[in-house]
Amino acid sequence: MLKWLENVYLDNPRIPSVMLNLEILRIFISPGHDFKGRHGKERLDHGSQSVDSVECVAGRGLEGDRFFDYRDDFKGQMTFFDLAVAEAVERKLGLVDFELSQLRRNVIVSGISLNDLIGKRFEVNGVAFFGSEECSPCYWMNEALGPGVESLLKGRGGLRCRILSSGTLRLGESQLKVII
Image (cartoon, rainbow, N blue to C red; front, side, top):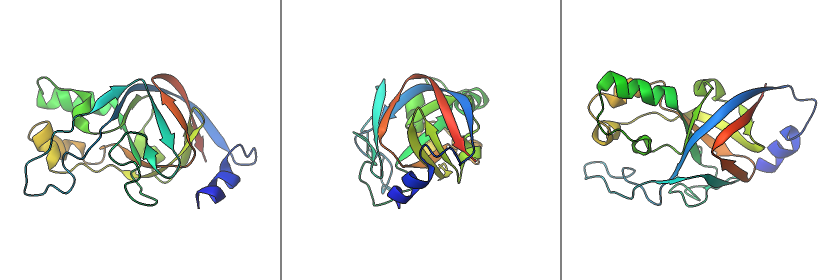
């Protein structure tokens, strides 16, 4: 399926697209799952590493991340999260010592409504993605950040993506190309 998408969409001038500015503010990878499969148990503490760049591998995920090669055609090979949402949650709940890594999302961005990318193919600096679905928050968010976070994040928990072409994402100003 990936080859078909690449042949149809990549660099095809007949497919209309829109270019937007996007800023990549933080990139996180985590070597293990703190919450997944832990229902009824305490969380683990694998931590998250903040990196300046990350290799996106088509169909597999982010090198070094817990979801790399997690499952064939996994719809959450990587996640994006909007800084404005994080700041709103921090303000609303008065979170103390809040760190963006606590969100357990990979790429923190500003400048785009992530829900608008659900069901769409897009590129960030030449790396192609498919916006699979909202990264719905779960009850673990209340443990990781504080009571009420799960409900505040409903409908704005970030964007889960499949990686369609390999390449590198780096911190800084970026170009977002949305395929219409």
